[in-house]
Image 1 (cartoon, rainbow, N blue to C red):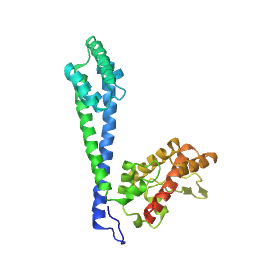
Image 2 (cartoon, rainbow, N blue to C red; image 1 turned 45 degrees about the vertical axis):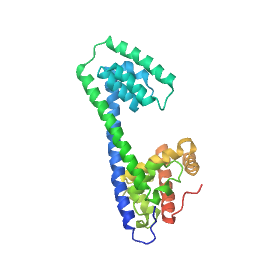
Image 3 (cartoon, rainbow, N blue to C red; image 1 turned 180 degrees about the vertical axis):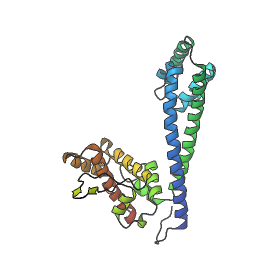
Length: 279
């Protein structure tokens, strides 16, 4: 791990930041495809093999997908083998045996009903795609961790309650060198969270919407960080600020935007002072 002592970013830091930005953006892209693939797979499963749904709580786990893949290919023995192979280290023998019983029932029910051959084939393809996306996301997340280990800013942002590895990496990747911003307001503007004033003649709007002119990736990451911070009061300072805005009569979205603005001020202070978040 290294720190920058001069105004010009250290070359190694600059290269690490560039790599992190590429990896986080690629992770975002693959994630969006993965989400759409999951929705499509669920819709197909409802048509092709709805009896399979009660077998697993998480239908998108590697174990569930491998078992489903074997079932669709007519390899019942391989389905049971896949269950034991992928679940034996994380689940009890009883859990595995219960899944085997449920799977047997599901396959018996499936055999009684004729389903679309085309949808059956497409579902097989979607399962292969989902497994490929999961593998790719794991690779990207490993790369993010390795690159982040060379960026102390990521470690600093992780000190903020509600911000984990992925969010910290994304925020640092999009902000870059915080010292390029004159102050927190400039960083707020960069995220597109500064209010835009609408005026016409003597009329001037009082409820201004945010400009959304800046980095949409940074803005999305900040929104998510706020929501994570508000969840179960993880970030008490943000939660208190949110409650204050709600008491003032602000709608949910306006209160969250205000919290996002506040959080960016905290982030700027952390990065500019090179100090962790203080509760």
